[in-house]
Length: 176
Length: 350
Image (cartoon, rainbow over all chains, first blue to last red; front, top):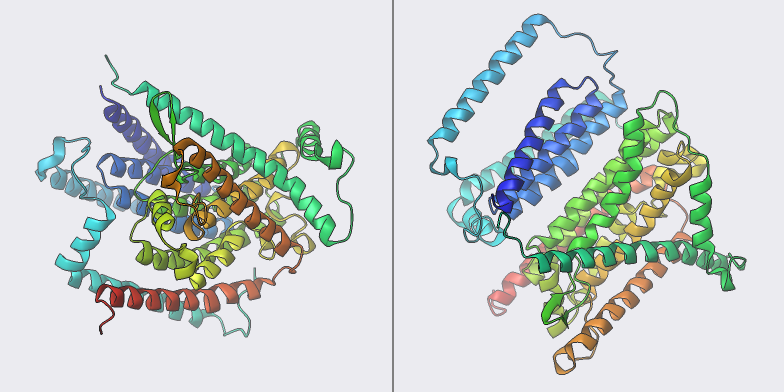
């Protein structure tokens, strides 16, 4: 067993355990913390697949920004397991079915790929390096890239507009 | 053999890690002493002068005192998270040092040992990622304290760090356009041959500096622990060495961000006006480390000087500065840099 395989199995176990704990833990804050661990484990997998840039961006964007906002909201609203109303049984059932469908789609997609049996890809050249990634994004896929940028921008402006509508504009910034 | 591992490499890296972590802790320890002395000088006092000559043993005495204090964990708080908070703060503070190039190469025991723990090709992004993790220590600690002042401090810290990360990231993008590399080592090597990056990116450095103050939660941006409004902010409920960890991680953060700023904009371990290739390799490596430390000490002094000179911002001023001034400035800097880099590639033809 090489050291990359040990890392692969360790990271996989960590990712699966944390992912289950995200759903299973009662307190929302604990769920978020487990989700952060999942992102770290997945970033480790990206590194093993020689995609350093993707790994680090995953941490910066998901663990570093989005999860902070999640935590922010949960802490600000002070959500607790006791005060959280019980979900309706039909809702749970619907969640189970939609989650299961997604699971099936992912499994069928993965089993079709060529590299499904490769756990790790060491020294496969610089496919995941920022230089090559940038060239691919700005040469071959420049139109989809720009369209998704515009989409993000419009989503951002939309969020600001919706946020402004609720409360009358204050002369100074919001204060905590 | 079951595991094919280069054991010499592992030992080399382990020794390097231990040295770097110990040095960071020691420097942070004496940064607390330095802070008190500088505060004293700026306020026309003497500062600590009882423990040892010139009070040089004061940080040791402070540390011992913190260890002997009673440890209190509040009721109705999550004990695990309460302990996790300061641990995370300390861990993220130290983790950044892994990608910093502390010096050139040393030739020892027939090996060329690079004075850098890991030369990853996304070095600067790694630093950025760890910095963005730093907020969790404060948030988790503040929330687990089960105290509304602590929670307020934690939320302030989170929103402040998210706001200033944006401007910091954009100023780094402008720097990357100039250097064309994400590896910190590569950046230092480039600066050894030519001018320091500060000459190409003065505005970017200025923005980065302000953001570094905000990311370290240093005055004038120490809103998270504003004692006149929030008692002690996120560490109100902490005592003993857990409080010590929070206070200490601030000094380590300050040290590390000084190192990063020296590396990115002031040539890192580059010795000014000296061509390193002409002299003995080992001597130059050691001198390089000392030069880097001299640059870092200047930055740390600057951090302290600002703290004891400029009063704390109000919260809305902080947000205005971040969103309405720094981000547009950083975007402007990025556009101008991009245009100039493009022009240079075209040999200055439109």
